[in-house]
Length: 114
Length: 114
Image (cartoon, chains in turn purple, cyan):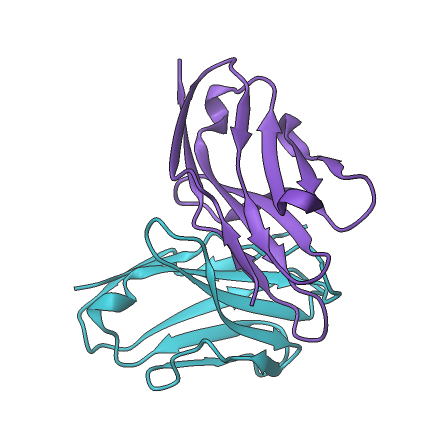
């Protein structure tokens, strides 16, 4: 069965600082990988996704993520955080085949200090 | 283009009462998902529809939960009777249906059972 681990429950950074959110997955084949962001009271918005090809993926709002097969990781990065980036971030892995499903991690809450 | 629409946004009920949530997916999206999101957790799949067929309902607690998507468009998720532990956010998502497609989420319905 597939699974996702987000080791950091809560991260606090200062505005303008760099950010890295960790994600490790478990899946037997090449996974589909996603990062979503959820603001309070809102649904989830897709930041970026990886299917194949270039292992460095660019997303919206200046985010990027790097797929590292050897480490089973898909960490999210941003060079300079803005106060509006404060939200909860979810990593997800998608299985392949006819029973395609998305499995989410427990999320990382990001606080941005002025 | 309108996104995924859910209603109501908030619902407060007494335990043992019935409750229903409604979802209208993005136009043309054949696949519809219902997720349960507990506080501080990532979304967990309850049921997946391909058009009007429930193709994965293995995680749906069928003793009290039911869902339908009669015409393959909008969908209703029902709980009867509700229990205190059902307090959570119920998210609906939709995709065009291909493996690995981005899932677009609605804002969710926050259920409080007293």
